[in-house]
Length: 157
Image (cartoon, rainbow, N blue to C red; front, side):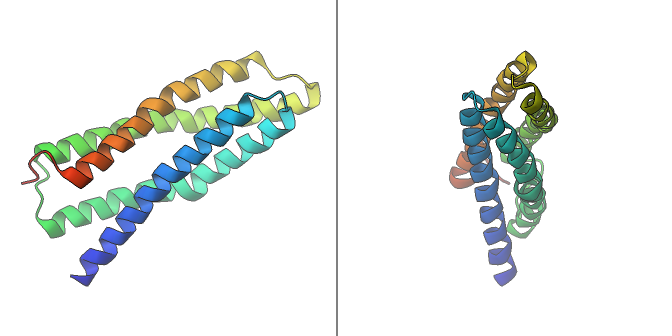
């Protein structure tokens, strides 16, 4: 039973990291992008890219591994409606997140180039809109997964 509790703790902590880092990244990047301070935007974009690799990526991997192990321990069915809902949302989040990572690198590059010109590229604003448009449904999906995890409204067997 101790193995179960350790896995559950890792699963919960990694869920906190995914949600917390995602929310923090979104807040700081969005707020920096709304300023005219190109240096602040460039530094924030650089840190956003770094935070995604240091925190989000390992936490997502941990979520998947611990989730599968917890299902095995608890005897949950991989063919259940609950699992299909969770995995569909997990994959949807990944489908949103992968282009977001690419966009973040582009935002970082554009903002760093803007440091020398003193003017933010119009492409930066377009990419920020895409970044937000992908982030909103992804974060909403994280919240739905939390709801499914806590309330288990669908059969798990």
